[in-house]
Length: 122
Image 1 (cartoon, helix red, strand yellow):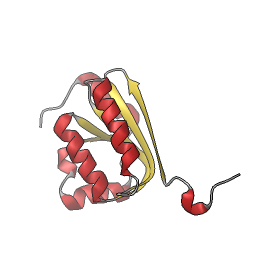
Image 2 (cartoon, rainbow, N blue to C red):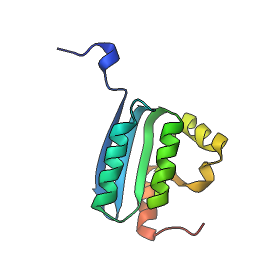
Image 3 (spheres, one colour):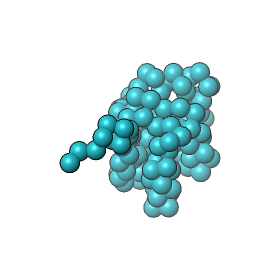
Image 4 (cartoon, rainbow, N blue to C red):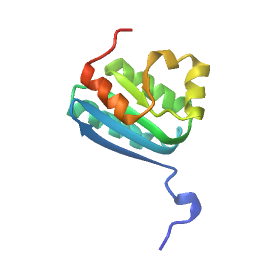
């Protein structure tokens, strides 16, 4: 039996380790009502390894200040790299001035390659 429309998950979060990096892939919408799973996934990644966290955002079509705050908190603990940031999310980062705080790449592959080179000087 399928769930009613309003009970369908509004987003998904999938994590996996890839060499020195931990990848967090997001799709859908992230806001105050859905941030819990992302917080748990990020906390797990921070415990599991010491390398950078790559947030792959290609499937994310909405995020609010809750998501931005999560990225900023995570950045305080670990290097955060963004990959495939869609226009609405890039707009959020640009309007808040946060875009300059994150290393960003057009694809997951280029973000992963950057983790092999080590952190960039800021």
